[in-house]
Image (tube, rainbow, N blue to C red; front, top):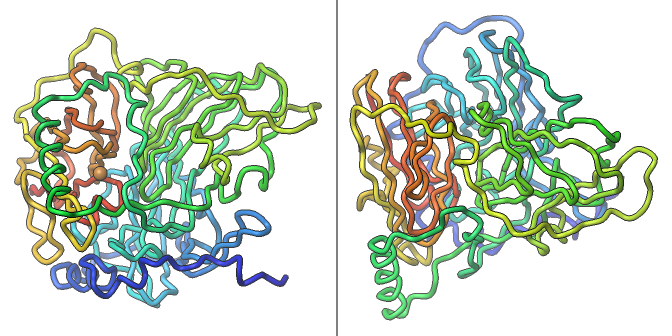
Length: 500
Ligand SMILES: [Cu+2]
């Protein structure tokens, strides 16, 4: 096959900045290696691994005239779907055929530090042109995923801007099975570039009333920054969009039959974007969030997923036709963020119909009228943006501190067995998909509304809003907390918890 070189990924202008901007990937790795341990002599199972993942550069054909060159797992995008089994230990070899040391993160699993895949916690790197064998017992059950955990900073060819993302499904011992079949969807953008400004959708969250004190704090800082002559900090935009590695209209359609109940497992594999997904003429019955069954499954017209969030939802196929299932943003859908749903015996052009306005409300799926257990301790956190403070990039702080790769000191010392409440206050107008490693948390208050029973590992915190989540300190060791928006985490929005 001949490939038109003009179709390749053009490295963004940002690559040229790499040497000067704090947060270049090599500099970050050097800093982390100074404090991260090397592989310890823990006895690992011998023999063949259950799964082998190979990290290497390769090509993704999003469409015949859009072939992207990027880092991949096993030469494909998304990486292979790993179906693991609850309670059954697994051995995985991760081989790195690139020149850059890597971190392979098991997102949403309650694994130990040596396995988790975050240098900030102390997971050893997978050396360049080397390998690591890891062994663990998968859990919790349900939809998880894996991705690189490098800190690319200004280098938009590295980290999760690349194609290093894949899905994990941990099969429970008993599957209730109220559906006819499963379909996995990985939402992902390619060809990132830096831009100035560019407002993210933020009015899709329910209960969007802003907290005055947070708004005053954020807006006055922004006004002061503008008055001093600073432009808006950099944002990242993309020119190509895909579901399961194909642009809308260029992959196989999802072929369905009337009356079928299809369980969609949707992963937002984006480095930075919040995604929506709608299927005209159909509704999604949300049954699990981040892989965990919700207390109260409920129907919605549109799914919204922050970076790294997952939704499992059943669609009853009862509106025969050829449909576009896609993002609400016309621009992104037009550049590929969609997939065709084709009913048996139907032909014609795929049809998109804009859904009626709706809001995304986590509490819809929570226990009604129940309160979460009281915490042993509440940790207060305020998130602040320092506009364009780092060579044009926004700097992010948690309680006034931007995370430092050079120190990597825990901000919060915890006690094992205690139940902690995180009261998170957002003094910026961005929506932050907040993630806690190696633990699941319970949503207890969303923008002033109490809830209970929803277990997640990422939660979207709206602009100038407050969210509370609880977790039990039951998986000792360093635990990374961060915003999953790559530009935010790379420029300060991280903190470590630690307990023994
Ligand atoms: Cu963020």
